[in-house]
Length: 256
Length: 321
Ligand SMILES: Cc1cc2nc3c(=O)[nH]c(=O)nc-3n(C[C@H](O)[C@H](O)[C@H](O)COP(=O)(O)OP(=O)(O)OC[C@H]3O[C@@H](n4cnc5c(N)ncnc54)[C@H](O)[C@@H]3O)c2cc1C
Image (cartoon, rainbow over all chains, first blue to last red; front, top):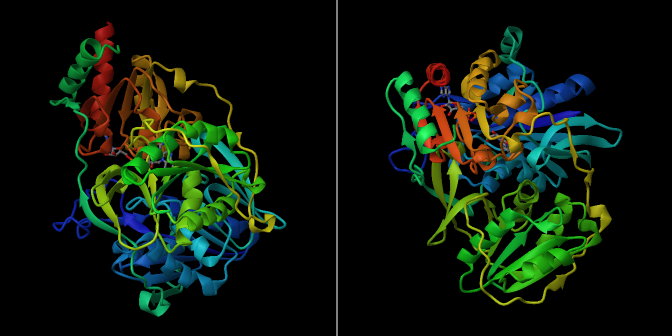
């Protein structure tokens, strides 16, 4: 099976993210970046499918130069090669604009499966994988926790709301958006990290892909949410705060 | 037409709660022009009847045998035809799992982009949605011509029945062919046996990724015991296998409404909040004073859980002694 995994680099969890002075994006200079969580699960699913059925796993990622480190991480975990779509204006493209870039890079590869994470931790649009499927004319399924190969295609476990699941059968080629939690993620081994250095990373630009288009939706401003609820913050040492909280719970909220 | 179309979703034979919230958002956009509601399925009579008394200018039954069970292909094809026939200015959806599965593809067929998970609509219109897992709000504008697709986050708009006379439902029969539906969905199932009933718990202490590793869970377990509370968790804790999935709170887990909910090291992503914000009293312990969990908390302690939780356990025990 030939599998392409679309991955995104996002600010590391818990990173102290601040809004930039123009109020149109976040301050990137002081941030650490990492592989988006559900994308890591998409990669894991792809690597496990390859281990079972053979074939190839390639990753594709759009973004500025820094994305190279996340691509290397994916290669170190076991992806065979990568395509880096170099672009510095990722956050000002809308979901269709980004999906067009990815689809243009994926199409000539003619993969059996296109996997992506369900949703990014920064923009959280949760649509890129579905739009890529639409642009490539592939059947798709989202919120997928597990993929099994069948005689005719794949059978996937799809998450529904409130703890329910469903299986869905799709013919190949197909596109799947992977939800976090279906597998145990692997770490890169030392050997893997060494090997990654020799693996192919093809660099493409948006211009080369000929997939530029005017956005139809524009993000204008970013701001801190205005607080709607008055939370009583309990200060002091941990001991003082704990004592104050218990007082409140007993005598004010009366829930103890 | 020109006007606003809202897609109402079937939830076990009734229109979902979130759909009514989407209808409220649609009314903001369609104040003058009126809102048309669509119900979609193989049998839509009951849904249409439920929608009819709710003040929509029109109710449209998009009905075809191939629209049950739900498939992304079927829904996208049927609604594409409806939208081409109606040419609405706005198409509004509830941001459900189903909608996230087909609406981005549907919008793409019109060269449009779904403005997803919207929490507010202002003059312009300007659409507000969250970024960075709820840490920021961003405002969005539709800058192209053609229909604008919008989905609405749970709990953001108040579902209110409008005061308009009921119209008789209309029918719309999309042209669908079985060969166009490429996926084969199976019956819904639940995976694990239930051994705890979080929904019935009076007190819950819930663990998030701030706990760092499985070996630290007994610390919070001790707090739960001291408070006579059930232990619950955010999704990543269950994903890692540190606690069973039956203890997960949130949109893909349980919805709980205990008298007391203590969130320990949980950031407060919307998918977690929808599962617990109905709790009577919410306490948040988080080292990040700007964590979105404080937005819904009644009481907060901004501090390191590894210092605060032991202090709390000691205080509870001292109170009992
Ligand atoms: C479709 C979908 C469905 C989902 N369903 C659910 C669901 O049902 N339930 C759910 O919970 N999530 C769900 N999620 C995931 C959700 O988006 C968040 O990723 C998740 O809730 C984050 O969990 P967390 O708060 O434990 O972790 P994080 O977001 O990583 O937050 C950890 C928090 O711990 C704090 N912290 C770290 N160290 C300490 C310390 N020493 N002391 C105190 N605080 C500390 C940090 O400041 C941070 O705020 C879903 C996501 C999607 C896309």
